[in-house]
Amino acid sequence: MKIVITGRDFSTSDRHALDMLIAAGHEVIDHSDKGMGSGTKEEIIYEAVKDADIVITGLEPYRDSLLKRCPNLKLISRRGIGYDSVDLDACKRYGITLTRTAGTVEGAVAEQVLAYILYFARRLDIQNASMHQGEWKRTMMHGAKSRTLGLVGFGGVGKEIAKRAVPFGMNVLYNCRHPKKEWDDEYGVSYMELDQMLAVSDYISVNVPLTDSTRGMFNKSMFDKMKSGSIFINIARGPVMDAAALKDSLDTGKLAGAAVDVFDYEPCTDSPLISCENVVLTPHTAPYTSENFIMMNEMSAQNVLDHIAGNVPEKNLVFKA
Image (tube, rainbow, N blue to C red; front, side):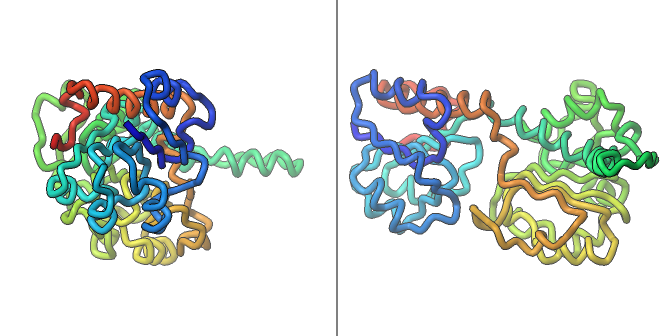
C-alpha cells in the first residue's frame, strides 16, 4: 500500500506512528513538514496524493473535485474528530472509507477552553506586566467561581469542559439537540433553551461540528442575544461564527471579550479580530499538545492498519466503503 501523510506535524516530535506504518511493510510518503492546512490549494494536495492508496490528513480539504482525480484512494484516515474538511458524499460515491481519531482531542480542547476562561477571570497578564514595570497595583477581578458557563453543543468536548469547569465552582449550562436528564447528575450541568442560555451566561463556549445548520450560526442576531459584558469562545470551526459580527459586538461593548482558536481558512494572519485588544487569538492550538498529538498520530496510523486488516473500531468509522 502507498500511504501518503499530508497532516502537518505527523512526525515532527515523535516518529512512532510513522514507524508503525513503515514496520508493517508499506510505502510511506511523509509530507507532514509541508505545513498543509485548511487553506492549502487543491493542486498542492493533489500532487502529493494523486497516486495514494491511503492518506492521513489534518484539516486540509478533500473535496469532490480532488477525490475524483485519485482513482487509487481507498481510505482517508482523518487525524482529529471533525471531518467537515472531507466531502463525505464524495467518499460514498467513490468508495472511500473515512475514519477519525475519536476520544483523543476532547480533553486537550477542554483544557484550552478553561485556560481562556481563567485568562479573562483573573487577567494575570495585566498584573504581571504591571509588576515588571515596578508597580504595585492590585486589580479586583471577578474570578470564575459562581460564574455561568453556557456550552453550545454537548458532545465529547462539551462534556470534558463541564468536567473541568464544575470543580471550579462554575454554574454550567448546556444546549444540544438531544439532551439527557441523566447528564444533570453525571456532569453537574443543566439543560437550557439556547436563547435563554445566551442571555444569562457569563461565558459562551461553542463546541459544535461544522454542518449546514451550524455554518454562520453565531451572527449579529446571536451576539445581540448574549448577556452584556459576557465572553465568547470558539474552539469549534471558524465558519460557525461571523468574525465581522463578533468584532462589531466587541467594538460596541456588547461583549467584554472573546477567545478564538479557529478561522475560516488556516493559516490565517489577517483576521478582522487582530485589531481587537480584548480578543485572545490562538492559531488552532486547542488540540495541540505533545501528548495529544502523539495519541492522534498513533490512532490515525492504527486506523490505517486496522482498515487493511478489516477491523476498524466502530467508534472511529465515519463511513465504511
